[in-house]
Length: 341
Length: 230
Image 1: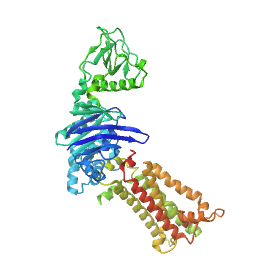
Image 2: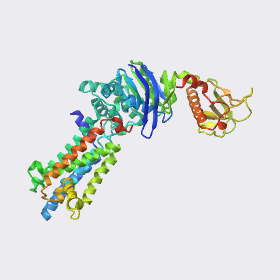
Image 3: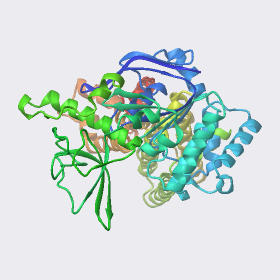
Image 4: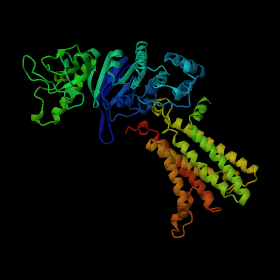
């Protein structure tokens, strides 16, 4: 099973371009799809799930083309789909919900259907509460029911959209562990969409970052971390820093770093931690922002934020008049040359 | 049969309860007015004016009210088949209500309203109910909202009641307007008792309902129209 996406674009009414000229080849395994809200992740996945028709280009799921009406039913046979917002029927219990969905997915043989449902209820840890009405389930339990319905036909192609959003840490870990096990168990393609960087870091060996409908990064998680190599810093400040012009940024303070040179106009904050010694800021920026900034080993969040800051700076440079442009250059510029499409 | 059981279980229980109460109230009022005033207007009202409304409201939720509609659209079974089965369940409910009411009237020796034989008399409730049902379904598919679908059905229903004079017996506007409006008026049995065009009216209403059903089918042919992705 392979997914081939070529020149794929989707424009909604009002000329809103949700996906722009995306090219991807996806092999079996668990692939993370990361990006801010409105990046086009859900649109891309809905196209792959045959729920939306692309405006241009195409996507082939195995041997089938999402544009061809005759192929869509075949794709649905291969597909397991957990949408971002899955409502459940409050008057049904988990077994009945899965039974109903199984029939709609073409599992007609009663005994095979029953054993498959029981197997999945065991797998997602809901066998004991299978007869309880769904309206009494917690958010995490509902997501597990959703995951079970996506797995009913043992799909070769599984799409899970934000499966861990809003869940407590225990449920998040449980769901992402399930996804990892599924990826190890066969030759299926699993696409995990999320904006929780940690989920991708813990499960995927390949990740794709979308921003404004375009693929901005396609590589291994450690490659994303490496983007922030030499650009992740820890600064301990005696008091709160003045906020930068964008949310999530601060201005550097104090003397220029030794060795001279311009410093970034503002830094992207990764985290803020109050300590007894002051406030500890973890930031990404290039060059070294302050003399006392300590370099730290970059993580995926650092790399992701550096990538996003680079995209933001590039867009700002394209829209601002020349005198207002940063004299320090665009963060992430070197990255874009090699990694941004 | 398993799938039918689930389609029934998925009906909104509150609406079902309201529908049951409406039936019981209609039955009581029919008995009361017939025994007290010896007239059958209430019989017609219950069958023609009251029964179609809860049915149309239930139909508006057949797709747009489904909380799992995105998963339904990704299932192998085509959406139109799922919605058609749910609409069939709603129609089945209407038929049960009407046939029980017929039996109730027979038990009380109250004559059935309408012209023609027993089957033709069933058009008293069937024709307006089908029009309101498919109008409601179409509006809900178009707007992706069960509330809008139900509101459209109730809106048509209210307008027909408020404007019944204009639609079926307005003297000032006599002519082509009345020729058309009398034939597509939903509640002709009540407001134009014994009208010579009654059967034509009932048949035309069924034709309108069939046309609306075809538009519903067309609307369900693309999932992005149903989920909002044009």
